[in-house]
Length: 98
Length: 195
Ligand SMILES: [Zn+2]
Image (cartoon, rainbow over all chains, first blue to last red; front, side):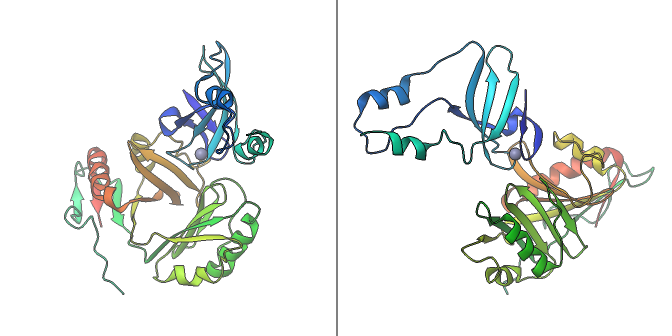
């Protein structure tokens, strides 16, 4: 499996570290909303098809990437830097009601 | 200045080795630069940092991922977004950059004692490195001056092409001896000389 890093180009998957499901929405650290925390920790879409994921190019430029991977074929349909992502922790902290 | 000891000392044996009866096709050496720095720009400050690198070293970085340049004494290349490795034969480059790369622009990390610089040269350099790293070493894909971040097993390596058949590899000092020995083994079948 090859992942095309936006900085380094196509690299073997061995250079990357999986950082988890890219659909998770992390509650504010002080949040006592148990449903939100439960969803963040346990709820997964587990799709048979395209899946939003976070990977780090740990054996290369070390950037964190937003990757769409097909769970049936391992085809990577898009990669982008996670930096500056509008689906970021900061945004959800602002929106989340504790 | 503290006298620096090379981690390669016990295993660096100058002379010809391996299958060199038909000629030496690889030359291995340790370049021992005085300064190895990592410079990082805050988001949006990349151009300012590149201008600072130009002002200090006289080296003009080309735009683009992994772009780099060398004049034989000083070298610089991008290894990550907004991050650059700068190398100088002379010591003391970190203090020069400390006044240029202000806290508003980014950071300076002195890795001079933390990295070991190994040079592999010769007509089979691409071929030997291709046994180690799953990246394209052909000249059109990896031009002179350019840098790459990759790894061999768990040994992280930054590689700069400093000639048509010459590459400088920067590895963690603590991994350098084992990496050097692996490089020697990989070069045996084509014949190599250690300088
Ligand atoms: Zn990368």
